[in-house]
Length: 236
Image (cartoon, rainbow, N blue to C red; front, side, top):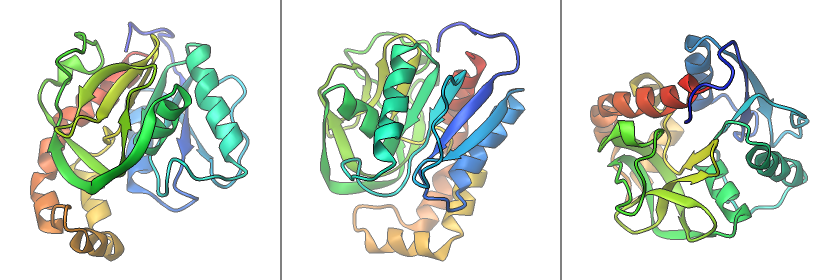
């Protein structure tokens, strides 16, 4: 992000797309917000909770489902993302939320031929500029859990996968998004892997890493977590 705007305690609105279910990723985001000296306000988006009128900062999470799905909550959620960009509110859009925001600026969001589940290298785009949010991470490892990819659109590409889809981008000066999970760190990934339903989902998906491999590679996520999620919070 850019230089810190507020220089004081910031209330960060966390738009939770996990349908009210306890989620290790949201817990990790809130812990990072508090560790950075700020406060967190979690909103159950799919549950129809009101969107914030004038947020100081927003982190919009990943979640289950398709970015093309319809729902009574979708209009207010999408409007909140668009307004944050237009009002130059610091915004970090993760995975599902990144795909939705990208579609709002004309990107094509389609299913991947194979779901990406596991720990993958972050590959900066050769055409991307030396961005103050992404560049400090260098070539690091990130956690992905997705079935959709982003192509094109009115966004500034910062990173692509080896398949060519956009994995990180900037939307104006203060909003960034990524299809990977910068909140993922060893503890939250271990908590996620400990849920048998998640382990079984990995086992069923031929393109996914097996649970044991994810556990072994989870320590490699520390750098991206500290640099990307930490870097966003440090810029508030």
